[in-house]
Image (cartoon, rainbow over all chains, first blue to last red; front, side, top):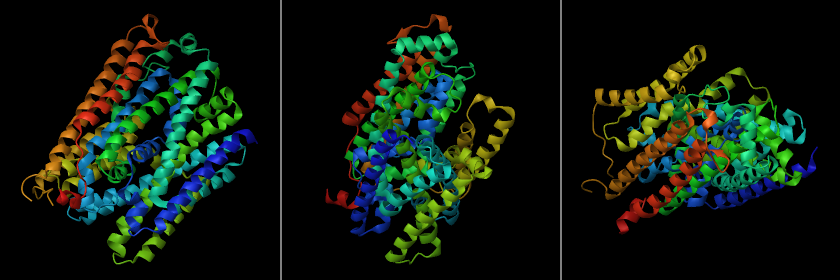
Length: 483
Length: 90
């Protein structure tokens, strides 16, 4: 076991626990438990808000998978990854002030609260959205846990099961105790760790590789395609890469775990600061992380498993203690994604289903007990699934983000800005989004991508058509946004 | 309350700015990447060791967008109260 790598990571985990504990003391004195536990009492400042968005979004896929793919594909994949810069400002500008005002007026704590209030308390809308969130995000979460456990496994030499246990306990303790504020605050710390970690690692990789011109020359000598936008095999088309602007760029507006953050800011000043910080931090982290992946290739050729590129290159180019600190970055990314997903899923169950339809008159004590209980039980459930992941889980995880985007983007965005939008449009849009996404997924797997673009593209367009058509055809009535 | 909430006018304008900025970002990113990157790889030029298409599309593009976001937020975005009570106090 490599103690000089492990010790900085353990210190990092302890720091995270401390923050969770500190937030829980603030929670104990709170007068509005539900809004505080699931939303941090709508008082997040600009820095914390920006970091929690970046950290939630920068999941295991962008921190381990992304650089790993860049290692294989070359500069073309960095180009693709840079489409994520748009999320830094787009989500906050689009949902922006109107979402903040409306969600306060509706007293919405979750994205589903917002949809429920906007679409005349439609039970179908609420249950349909709660169901998609629970199924898709639960699977996405399990996949992240597997990633986290693999990372601990590769660093410590512990068995996969022990690593998973360690990871599960750390996440559960502070999510269960501290709720949203703990998650947002630890996200802020984790975001800062990611920012510093990737910067240090990029510099170390450039120095080890003998400077950027040298590294690029090595790449060119190995395979000239690596320095083109078209990928190592020349098969990354402009249309395919551009379609990621929907999946990881503008479509992110429809992800519940991101949208809920756009309800949580204190005032428009914090929103403005978050816009600036979020854009800068997203861009820097994405650029650094993916360049590290590409530049690692001449230094450590022949890595087979993409996910291991970042840990291996960190151990290769940095002194062990520093590698430990830097590797806390992907760890941070995974943990912060997992904790937000956990909270979103449990809020869907407690807030959207239980409090709405099962027991609306529940008292504070019951709500508290149920919130902690559901969060804990979900964690335990994910843990059991991740021990021996069933195929269905991996399958659902594939749909998670694209499917949710196709389902929610129009009910949220058009619900906010288009007065003719109604519940029939919202229901049709969600059903169309999810079913066409799943259908197209199979088509693309069988016959190659339709028109060469990512699966998410057409379902997003079709769900837009469904939203407009059904809103205008059935029970057409203008919605009043005024109080 | 009569007519449109004054805060919504601001919110709508800022959402449109967001769409405009995203479109500009896409055109810049796409234009440099595939405009400069589609030629034969032997004829590539390099800036600071990076392929020129990548440097302009991703590095300069990102910095430019960051500057634009700062300018837009500082000079064009208006602070509004989010709570109804806050509004009534005005």
